[in-house]
Image (tube, rainbow, N blue to C red):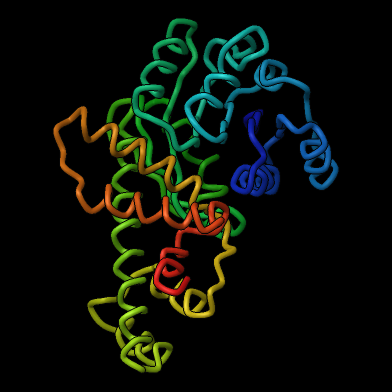
Length: 289
């Protein structure tokens, strides 16, 4: 019998992810803080929506969560109407929020107290990855819990892996965002250099993308960056949230992240330009504004 699934949080990522669960044959109920969005999703997928995280969790074998940050996560997990108020012993919570490792460990401890599994499971791949069911999921937690939910995760992800104890998924996502920040900044600088040198940057990108400079960002964002098109889902505001998490963790574990700190400030410049909702490739706008 298919697992009963609750999905909490229908943002740009959660909305399509929950839809993939339905398409894979799971019985899904959803909760979203904006009820009208949950109702629209439920109508589109012939499924049901409920009015609190507690109600969503009550009948679920697996509770998937995808909200904004640590505070949002605590708000849907805790309290009289939170997930833990409704979750049954033996159920598993899979948290797809990009949050701190600290909050993952906190919620794991509280979940464990009442016999509920908890996996931190941030995702990479952006809005397009969510819509196409091609996300990458990095997880921390118990191997038995992961084995139970792996087929479900496969309905919206091309790859997932358990990386260690709880918190490991969040730490891996921090590494992911650190890498992206550096790559996008390098690409922005190269495109600015090429334009100033009078080169046909589209042609140059076609050439260098076949060599060692190749990256996902170059393949998917260079041409739109050259057109000053920055509307691709993952906003600068959210990237700064993620980089702040990584920089805070670095202070705790003794890492030095000079490039990450610098690029974070460059994203602050983009915010000052009014680009808080532009996607992360908008670093090029600093050179053209």
